[in-house]
Structures are given as structure tokens and as C-alpha cells.
Image 1 (cartoon, rainbow, N blue to C red):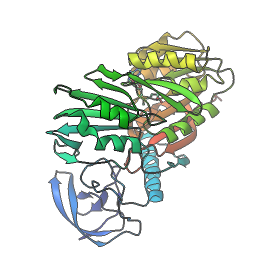
Image 2: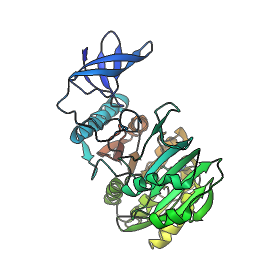
Image 3: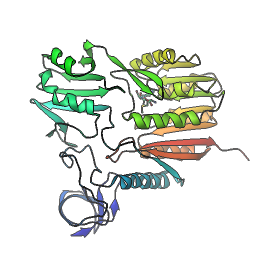
Image 4: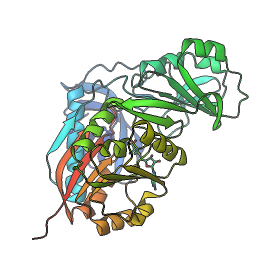
Length: 400
Ligand SMILES: C[S@@+](CC[C@H](N)C(=O)[O-])C[C@H]1O[C@@H](n2cnc3c(N)ncnc32)[C@H](O)[C@@H]1O
């Protein structure tokens, strides 16, 4: 038996003995009996056999697949405590890897359940579910408590697609219109009549081709319209997305010249263009840039240009005096080339949005040689998981 000290960055309980042991789903201060399931030279991983003394913060988890499916890591912890965990985790990472100590404002989710507008599932030998983490073992599910209700309603009717083996992604728009994206070697025998009568289906894409309807849908965030293609990125949590758009809006100075790097369908840049004199958006996915150009039109913005390409490289080609840069890269963060260009351009303000605090800290370590952190937020984009979204506002250091 052992007493759990704290949580690691993945939400596992830590026990320090001769060696560090990470105990799945154990909470700080709990006394647990456990057995080791993995041993390396440096650490062990263990599962709980018995919780001898539970934490006061432990709650009954509502999902029958929790512990099995691997998607959620914190359903057994009170919601307020999950936010404390995420804040402490980001504080620790910033301090350890970037030597940054700053106040963090926490933006909580409207609800820790039914917030996701996108879900990716596997169909294996006619069974629907998720692959257990790091395995190809299917955990069969009938619903996902993180997904919007419209997505769950469709999961119950996935049998009408008659798929034996497939990857299926379901995306739901603001008004619960559904886009279903399938890759499969099966011959499609889809009961379209039933499905279109019982669900608001905008499009079905099979193996990157339109099978039914359209290959794009419309999102609305903060009264702005965004066309989104089936393979264009859009944040999975509309409530938190709206909060991030508002933060961006509040940090754009009137008449500034802005670059929105990794712009997706242009939601941040289009928001910035309300105040900026000029905005340049850069994105690598062709469909997302096509969406962004449409989004410029439907939101009646003249002062924004979008370019297709690698943001790490194209930024250098913009011949304008950029004073504000919005950065929202994939998990891997900025490439060296991008960071070097940023430090050459030296905009007055950088708004860095990140879904991985580790790569954010790595990039901030270099950026804070010439920038100071003006404001730091974390937003609970991915409730019930250990993932966290960060928004960091950086101001250039004034030379003395
Ligand atoms: C985290 S998303 C942010 C998208 C957008 N800012 C939003 O809020 O919806 C990252 C985006 O970067 C794009 N991307 C990935 N690598 C890129 C690169 N090297 N250059 C430009 N865009 C890239 C992805 O396609 C994706 O749209």
C-alpha cells in the first residue's frame, strides 16, 4: 500500500518509493493498493487494486467506458480540482522549461460534458468504439459523454452505414448539422433515406470523395460565420473557441498590421480584422485557405489576405510592418525557422495559442529573451482529459 503524493502531467497518481511509480486513476493523498503493469529502469506504471482511503476530491464517474477507453483521464476528480490540476501543471512546465513565473487566469468550460463538436471512432468487425490507448484493442461504445448530443444520436444509428471496418469521424456544427467522414475498404451500402430523415446530415465523405451532400458546413462563433471543409481544422469546443476569439479581439490595437499564422479557416484573423488595418493569414491546408477566402467574403472583410504555405517560411515573404502576430500552431509548436523569423520581425505583440504546454514553454524560453509575458490564460478546451489550451500575450521588451 502507498500514499499518492500528487498527479503527473497525464493525471496519474505519483508514488515515490525506491523508484517513481505512476498509478493510473489514483488521486493525491489517496492510500491505494496497486500492482505494477510496466517496469522500466527509471519508473513503474501501476493499476489500482484497492482504494484503501479515497480522496475527498474523488467523485463517481458517469461514463461506463472511463478507465477502459483512455480518452478521459480526470472524470473521477471534482471539476474544480481538474482546473487546479491543469493550472498547476502549466505553472510547473513554464517554470521548469522556460523559467517563467506568471499569474495564470483560468477559463472554465460551460459544461465538462457534451462539449465536443468532433469525434473519431473505429469500426472493427462491425463493432463501434475507440482503440484503447496505445493498443489496437477496440473498446466498444454506444456514446461518448464528451460529444455533443447530436453526435451521440448518430452513433446509435451508425449501423445504417453497414460498415464492417472503417474509420469514422463525425463533426457537428453550431446547429447540430452533421458531417460524416469515412475511410474504408468496404463497399458503401448506406441507408441514406433513414439517415437523412432522422439526422441533420450536411454531407457524407467516403475516402475523400463526396458520397452525399456537401463537403463543408457552416459554423457560427461570436456572430461570425465560418465555412469549414471536412478536412479543415476547427476548434473542438465552440464555447472555449468563442472565449479565445474574444481574447484575440481585446488584444488587437486599432490600425495594427497583423499576421495570423497557422490560421485554419481564418477565425482568429477575421476576428482581428475588425480592428486591425490589415491582416495576413497563412495556412498549409488548401481547403482551409479556400474556406478562409470565403469567410473573408461572408463576413464582409476587405482588409485581410490569406496565403497558402508553410507559416514558418511564408511569414518572411510578407513585406509589411507587422506589429502583431497571432500564433496558433499544431502541437509541435514553432519550427526553428519560424522562431528565427519571428525574432527578426520582432512584432510589438505576440498572441501565442497552444494546445501543448511543453512545446509552448520550449518556444517561450527563446521568445522571452526579447518579450515579456503580459497575460497568461489557460482554457478548459478539453474537459475531463489532461489536455489544456494556453493563451499567452507577449509584449516586446522596451530597450533601456
Ligand atoms: C491548432 S490549428 C489552429 C487553426 C486556427 N487558428 C483556428 O483557431 O481554428 C493549427 C493549424 O495549423 C495548420 N498548419 C499545420 N502546419 C502548418 C504549417 N507548417 N504552416 C501553416 N499552417 C500549418 C493546420 O492545418 C491547422 O489548421
